[in-house]
Length: 111
Length: 120
Image (cartoon, rainbow over all chains, first blue to last red; front, side, top):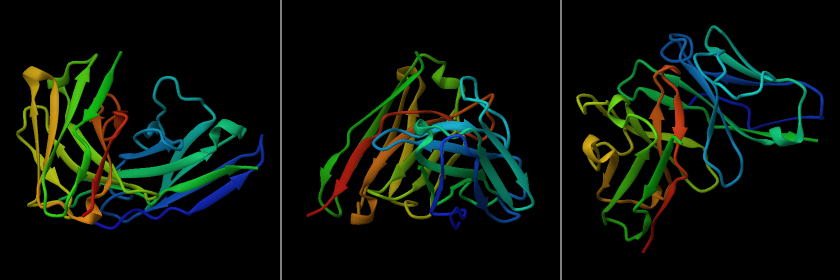
C-alpha cells in the first residue's frame, strides 16, 4: 500500500489561511469517509486534529477544518498562529490488507 | 487521565529481538482496538500493526509481516509488540495508539513513544 501524497512543505504568514492536500486512490481516500489529520510538533507524539474527513475532536480549535473531493482530502488552517508551525499528516482507512495508510507529511512554516 | 505509556525500546543488533509494551490507563482498555505506529528518524509516520479489542482481528504492514507479533492482555491493560529478525530499517520511534470509538477509524490517543535502534 503506497503512502498518501502530501506536499512536502507549505508556508503562510500569521493571520492567513493555508490548505494542505492529501491525495490517494478510490481504495482509500476516495472510497471511505475515514480520513484523519494529525499535528506533530518536534519531539512530540502526533495529535488528532480532524477525523472522518471534517470532524474536530473536543478541544481542537475551529480554525482547523477538513474536506474531501474525490480522491483528495484537504486540511485548512485559518488565522494562522505561530503555534500552528508543525508537521501535519493525513491518514485514511483502506480496503487493502493493511487497513490504514499515512501521508508522507507536510511541514508547515509560519513566516 | 487517559494515557498510554510505551516501554521496552533500546539498542539491538540486526537479527535480534525486542518486546515493546504499552500500558494503558484512564479508559476501558478492553473496549478499544489498539495499534502500533512507527516513525523512522526524520521520516513520516508508518502504521505497523493493529489488534481488535478481543484480539479476534490482527493486521500487519507488509514491511513487518512474519517478523512482528502484536498481542494484548486486557486484564493487565497492556499492549505488546514482539519484534524478531530486526533490521536496520526497523529503527524508529514506536508509538502505541488507540483507535477511537467516537472518532471512527482515527487514532485519538497516542503514547509518547519508545525508541528502537537496530545497529551493530
